[in-house]
Amino acid sequence: MIKILHNQNDILIDEWTPYFFVIRDLLFYGKWDEFLGISEENAFIAENILCAKRIEEAFPAIGSALFLPTTPTEIVGFFETAKINLSNLHNQCDLDVLYDLANEALLNDDNDLVEQYAELLIKLDKDSAYGYDLLGTVKYDMGDIEGSIVYLQKAVELDDEMVEPLSTLAQAYFNRKEYEKAVDIWKKMIKLNPDDIISYFTLVDSYLNLKDNASAIRVLKQMIMRYPNHLMGKINLVSLLTANGDLKEAMTYEDEIEKTKPQNPTEMEIWASVNLKKEKYDVVENGIQEYLIKHEGPSFLKLWLVVPMIKSKRIEAARKIIDEFKDSNILFNYGKHEIFDPFLTEQEIWECDLP
Image (cartoon, rainbow, N blue to C red):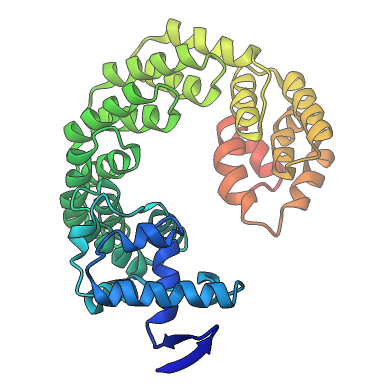
């Protein structure tokens, strides 16, 4: 212990004194009165807060920032020393800072730290949906699907409109091939947020695994009604309608894709594939060239120029583009499977030394 005499007052400092500044700012809005309010009759709390106030008065630069970072284990240790049950602090402290710290640990893939924060949050609030969500997410990320479902279900029971645990729980059911349960959750997520495009696609995947093509088609149509220019949705719908034998309707959506002006590289690929299928080689070449000039890339879109060039017998021009990518895996993994094989004959591929 250190003893300082300041303005005729004794300031006694021990190993826990800095931690009062930390706990104040983490849990009590940075206010001593809020901190003291948890247990005014607790001598350890009252005396140390009085001491901390005197330190702050004497040295205004002293604050929690000097003593951070901390850990959930240290926070638990502090309250054990103070003989305060964490569950008794429910509704007496602010958990927002802990939420932020836990989320930061989650973004940093520090699963052990996330788990510690989650357990701390649950000790402070047994009904913390976010705490159970964190535990479930960590279990899921570590491959413990069974364990993740237990905690995620608890989070959803506590807050059935919390999107994060709903999404992870649906994915966990999907991974366990319990597609009916995944369907129920993703339908709910779309109802909660009709603009969530990922939920539409994951719901479609679940229906396809259930061999329910009709429902998958219905969901894609629902999504396209909300996003009329979403080319990824439309090309998937074209594939499903074609597989279902609805060729006339599939062609209607293909025509819509053909007439849409792509806004990003993915849409450009979809648009180019539809137009190449219809042998509109000049349209594709002009469209790709215009996009590349306007956006200065991405360079891999140049590979879509190979087909129009070969079809118009400009073999050298096509080979020049191919040479740009000859040392890259993209030529085989992307060019061959997405562009060359679907739209060129074996003879054309052989003549141009394509992979």
